[in-house]
Image (tube, rainbow, N blue to C red; front, side, top):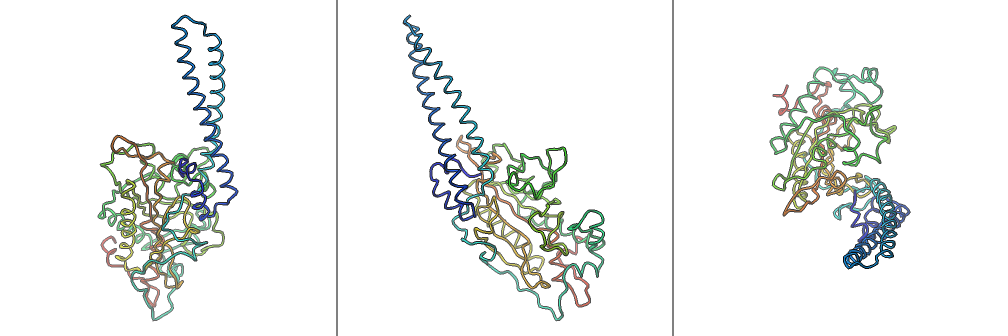
Length: 414
């Protein structure tokens, strides 16, 4: 959630930044009116309180002197009634303001390039050279059927479209990747967690999935529970409503969970294969830091995910997202895109974001330093989407006969 004080102090700056993320001027103008009304009403209430305090002191003085204070008492009682009315009005206005702020995205960092969509993202670096083949490389879904790794028909039978069943070496390789990724992250200083794959509404509100993206979540009927779309929700909210000692920061966490997404806005996209699924495994990185640490940790997280891909021998590129492609809660994001030879292009496999204090304000995650409570910065990123990593290995390590080599670093896990 953006800072109300910043909104009231420098509304034009907030408008300029949010406009880069596509927030309409009408929404911002309504927000400005509501923000000013809230501020003015609160000022009236505080002025009234100050007047009431002053008159109450005079009332006490008159009582001590045995003088008539009846008229002053009537005036004080009237002020009390008006103050109660203003208090209720302030509460309603603040509730409405917070509700509207919850639907607004984070302010983009000044480093983020201005652009309309993914076509205006900026490639920062290419790592490794894409493999060349003496034959036409097959797509992962064809390779999955040839090797008996992926069963799309039975996945649909068990659930519906966009679900896949893995068997044999496909299932074993998925498990090997999870163990390898967690071990890799642990060696980089990330503490491994095993967390629930259901989360309550307070948690999803804290990390920004609610209220705006409820349609993309799987809700548990009759419960205040949702299937998590990413372990970011669980890991970040471990510290919701907590004050952390500054000496404990930065906190670096990792976990592997299944992730569940309705993919409500992706009709017709990547309908074949495992690129876009309703359920998929993902190893996540989350960091909770002091503001002064977050940029350094951001770079560390990007390097961790990139080095992991490099260790698997997978060519990839780092991409700085423009304002039009930046996520709701992100102030800054670098995507890692892996080379898929059958498609002849790079596809997203990881997304590392710094949200600054956006999630911390929503989730009330603070740290204590010099006897003051300050908001932390939170960061999150994929390390990596396991299914997409499996796809990348299948396509990049395929042979002419359709068989698939196993990267050396994974062999001990098999």
